[in-house]
Length: 341
Ligand code: NAD
Ligand code: TYD
Image (cartoon, rainbow, N blue to C red; front, side, top):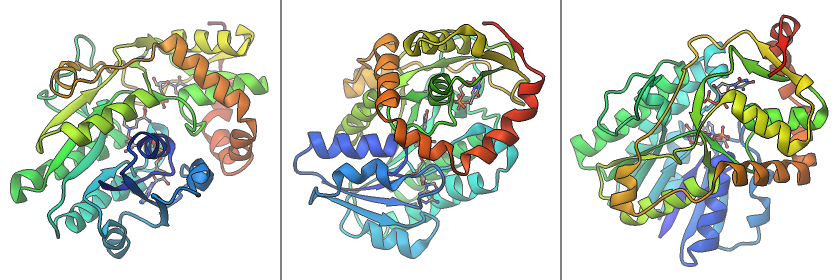
């Protein structure tokens, strides 16, 4: 199998690339990545001596780059995306461009030849906020943030290529991932690294929003199985069934980093903040034979250990563009915050 992994220099893509090369000895992987603020070449540098690995710096919206990178590949795994909800609220243009138009460009390049599979990596956020119960793959999509709406557009377009042209497309919708190499703008790595720096942990609203936390290696294992076993035209939810409020996640982070509760600050909520996501994962369990293996307590410890051992990685991120982002996103809200968890 020869894979094109787009967005492979980001969080999940780099974990996936490493796992695929480690566990599938006859697979080759080409990564195509634009190296946006979230994509880091160093996330893959331990693979540079691996002859089955190749890195191409390029944009999925660029037709020539897409065609060239896809040469000889039978499978495309599209991780490339703008991914942070708060940034999408600030400016949605790059989200629409990469998460929808980029998918179109890749699908057009893909359908020029007979190939095995186009795997579109989507998210549980396309279902919108789910007050009760769990989302099934057949539920109507109701995305509420510009990020979620763009991801819904991307996966609907991908599925339309299956229906219209018979392009072999599978869509996966995963819940919130956490683990090594996650850019420290997202809740878990932001709070772990802030705790390590003795800086405030800014909880949005009342902190009772819930997410279903999936350890990144479990997600990547699910994707490897989907590539080998999925029929085209299928959609699979991927979740661990480990629902925690943001307050509970924050408490776990305080514990694993040995941090004082005084650092926790409640700040003004995110606009349109989805209250809860939760997935029914019966389909992937029954059809693909996958189940998450990592409990949250184990996963959060492993994650904190990784950030403790890789301080240079996140310190260099936090001293760059991130500073201005953090100031504009949090400075005023922190001035009006209240404390105690
Ligand atoms: P990330 O932000 O860490 O990485 C995104 C990667 O895509 C980066 O390497 C970036 O450089 C690259 N990229 C962005 N625009 C590009 C373009 N135009 N051309 C080429 N490369 C480009 O994201 P992540 O958290 O690893 O998420 C990966 C995928 O998984 C995304 O599609 C996301 O929607 C989906 N997903 C993420 C989560 C999560 O919790 N992180 C959950 C479910 C689904
Ligand atoms: P995030 O990691 O941004 O993922 P998503 O919004 O895509 O689920 O946020 C996870 C949860 O944590 C979400 O309910 C928003 C909340 N959150 C905070 O309370 N404070 C923060 O600084 C961030 C980044 C997120």
